[in-house]
Image 1 (spheres, rainbow over the protein chains, first blue to last red):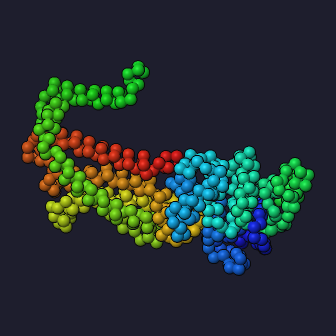
Image 2 (cartoon, rainbow over the protein chains, first blue to last red):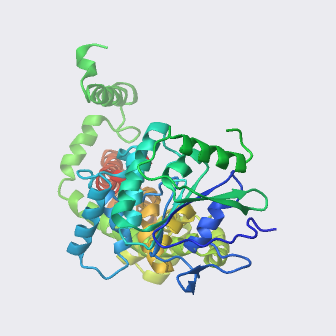
Image 3 (cartoon, rainbow over the protein chains, first blue to last red):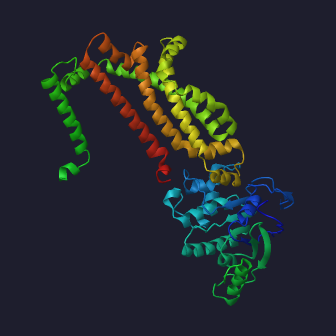
Length: 230
Length: 255
């Protein structure tokens, strides 16, 4: 039996969508299929009009464990995705610097990953994924290993960056709070087999307040959808 | 501890001085025979007597050592990398390696003489055999341990072909392991060159050492060569560690 079943999801260009579900529901698998790291055993998945056959820098990914290349400093990590394209070195530095500034790491270009905190590492991960100007940014519980305070800060930062770059974001999380705070729509997945149970639209203007009754209500609905206490 | 012993290098130098002192006393007052145990001052004098020979002897041995080590790296790194990256290569090379590896490098000296005669390449070949496997096995282990998640990260960022993934992900990841292999190989290779020169090749540090014993019975000169061989190895190891750990592998200490 596969990890996923009856997945039917259309994602609009420029949309911020969250996939939420308990661990083992296949939300990461779904993200990996979209990234082209895994192929579906049945069904089709298309990007624009083409079916996805493998990884492509038009669909880059930010990982929960950051996955920075430890032998490269911040600038070199960010430049990684530009090196496969035939861009002159000077231009590469310029583009990388632009994204390093965007994520707020100006001054840390020469620092190595081991010298950075978790939040800073994920800023590098974000800059590295954005540097290729991807059409879709895939985020696999990107803030899952950060503590709560940094996590909320990073959500705000991400939204700010998203307003600037306007790429489509597919964001996997298991936090209903995070999903309602960042997303336009939230797809709720159930476990064994992973199926989309419901898709909730978050019709709250940004910036959102976690104390807004509408926010609290939506979060409760999603938690109920996950069979969890509100 | 007193203020003096806390100073860097004081205890280290003190321990060496004590050993040299005991050696001198035992050699002069208890043994009293240069052939059985030359004293420290006799060995020190030997260094002075040998000062004209030493640079040439060191140069010959180092040249042979370098030939062997270089070839071991040229052969060992690509094979080890291929074995760590491609399962089919691992299956092809592993049985051959398992059979050849346990043969002591010194056992190859007769064939080294037959194939390369008394050339530097002959002596270098013995070093090559000794140095090959530590480099190969460590490269293999390094490539094998490349985390899948880093490979996938590179793929998502556009490095999708095997060559690019090997060059830009696996190789830098495995570099510390490869350098460890080279460092071990340097130790083994140095032993190999001394042994090869003692047994078959008519020049170099190993030959000189054996000559002092077998033909000349000059045990004080012999001991001077022993110490010299150790010091050369120590310096090489120190230089290698300085170059790799402080420069190339700055990132590695905290991983």
